Length: 134
Image (cartoon, rainbow, N blue to C red):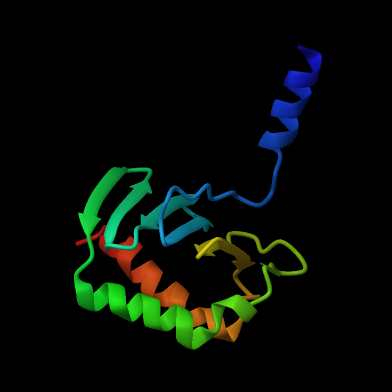
């Protein structure tokens, strides 16, 4: 019992959020900021998406054009070559932490350390999150 409690306490102290992707092509997490965001987005290979925010859970389907643009952005960026640990050397007060999972590969980054190749991908995913899937 004591070991379980210690394990739970240790896991609660983790500084980097974890995205647990379901069978999806893309899983995205944006956490932090001055407002304490905790946004989770998953997109499956057919464009069916789920956005989970503090305000609720939203299911929607991306149109074919948007889905293709996202897939192209990942390919153009060379996502497979982006360092998996692209976090800032020091925590950024009120900064965002981003976790992107694509084709089973996870990249973690944060404000002030976002690799240039990853910026267009984050912009696209942030637009989807900010629009609430509309």
